[in-house]
Length: 219
Image (cartoon, rainbow, N blue to C red; front, side):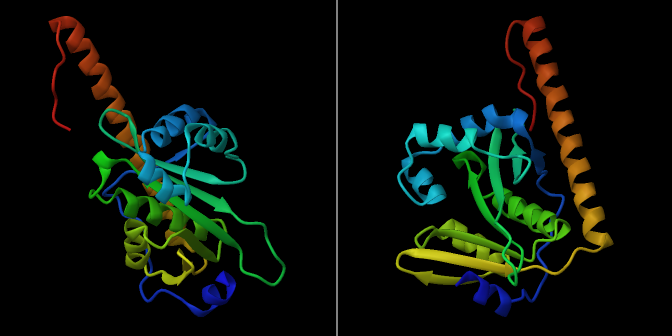
């Protein structure tokens, strides 16, 4: 079903990443941060993210099974270097005669919502998908996942509902020099932002030791 929709829909406005929310590409060394992030989701948030009730052991299995050589994982960190938002871009097996496709899944902790983090993660994944020859980006979720549906529709995705589930599709144009430069710029900005937050965190630790109490700095 999704291939038919994907072939019939192109966004009227290209959805590209901005620099407002830094988004880093994660690697295997971030498994603990990813696990901690997902375990902080409450029962309802887990149901919306994974489409079913998701106990801790299932989350452990999911994180252990992440293949960073096959898929791509993105993250957004808060001022304390906590992973506040995380997205998984899973590449689907290629089928002859069908467009190359990838599935997008995202979660944002309560404290990070309403700040454009989900939008930034989807935008970053969209640009990366174009640069890795993905032609169709899609989302599968529960039909009552209003936040995800709002995000998908804002991105220009075509949404179809069936039997309590929802599928959203975005047909992506090919990569060009602009998308390559955009992704590099976003990655450099995210690395700079992370390094800055890391330095501020270390400075706080030094001041806390020196003064014997935490030093509060603006975020």
